Length: 180
Image 1 (cartoon, rainbow, N blue to C red):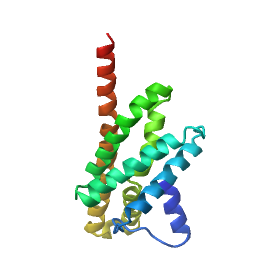
Image 2 (cartoon, rainbow, N blue to C red; image 1 turned 30 degrees about the horizontal axis):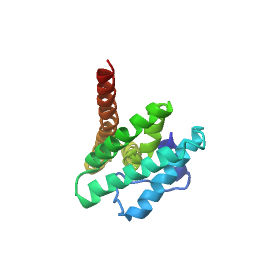
Image 3 (spheres, one colour; image 1 turned 120 degrees about the vertical axis):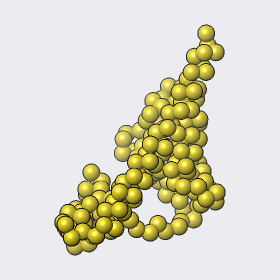
């Protein structure tokens, strides 16, 4: 719905969103601060108690910094960066959620909301609208961009899911095995 709202708003203004664009590099400090704001906004929007907001906000900022370092400093792809960031979140959130009796999914997802590959989904949506408007005369490059953007978003979200669930399952398994 966010993508549809963005594309509709752009269309009303007579502006199109191209398929695949250029990503502008942002400094680590600005990126981490923006991630913290996104996490806090998400938590607030979904009625997370204010006293709990610092937990996912700080963890989310750390995860975002980790992703930034994996991608920008180490040179890995964004899917690996998202996977590593989500591993960190899961390892941190699992014991916190257990100890404070908080829902793992709520705290973990709030912590990683800033890692969602929205820009690729927006580009894909813009490209799909271009394909529809162009019809049979659409350049094949636009179709290729749509496929790449959609595939990138899918792989990043898949990486995030595995990064969050693998440590949680392992920690739960070992905790229950040693509790017997």
